[in-house]
Image: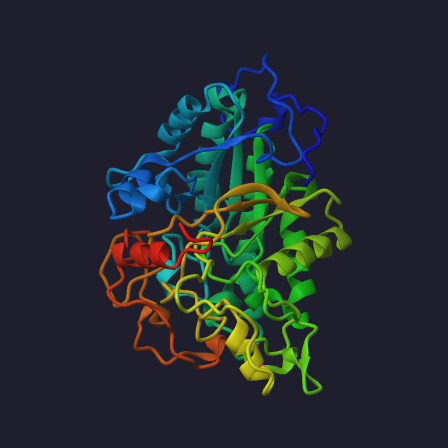
Length: 449
């Protein structure tokens, strides 16, 4: 997105049928939609996260950075365990805005049968509870965002829609080595597609709301077998349940993940002694080696399957800096492709499929608007210091399971080519504060703090 204004869209009663329209002052117009909501805008600093960050040694260096607000269960809408609810965040955002355009970043994340390939982020709703998702999760969020106090204000609401959901339907179904029964169920019943379509339609009908669909990351979707099929599934969801592609502002990649923003020491087009780097164990025939090239290319792929040409992309850079003493200063030796790639790559994970509380990770680029062609912003959608999942089984009432990928002793599965998990030890439940991880992110930040 380039920052030009689109046509104004009045916030009318008709646009909000079934979304507590009685609460909306239909006599006032919503702010005109802009091409890039981050351009010329502040971004809301979550006081809950900021306080935790500031309480950490060295945390004051980043505690004023904007981060995402995760609405990951129905109870989170009104606030849980001392955490602020949605209205409280919006009220605080209005205070921070001082009347100037201000982005509020929400992660809408409670699909039925959520995260069918990773137990750590399982949710509270069963695979068939699509009606409950609509009426008890999306509708209440839409009702709050539709209130005149917020809908007709300086706020720009950016929604990250259902992390990891749609890519799972492509990569982890249909008899593939990575398939799970849970993902096969969600593909068969269609509730991921229906849920995302419903969320896009309801939330996208509000004049100051911008929806970004999660599109995985390059180390998941960058292969030919996954790339276009994922774009097609996103198109299917964007046109389900009354939604249209016009209710999608863009995509977000690398949400809560660790893929390097840009690998400067090698490219996918390099070769060593006549062998392409795509043949290296790390790249493994992927067409992309970093998030920037992947996000730009996938945005174009969506345009090719029918999305507007001005859709944008966000990249979550909260944990993909990979700085510190382990960061390579130049290319690896040209002995062979593996030595060359492994010696030069910034991403120090054991395998690109490792996703849980990765050892050695660091804060990445600070949040920034319009940093590169086609990119609306670098964002910290995953708040640094919040765990991806527990290292061992922890009983809880949040619907969160134990995934061995969060266990540092785990030797892997087909999704990470049976490598060690690379996870930090002694981690709490997903979303809970993990001080040791926060300190590691500070230490390994790149750019350095």
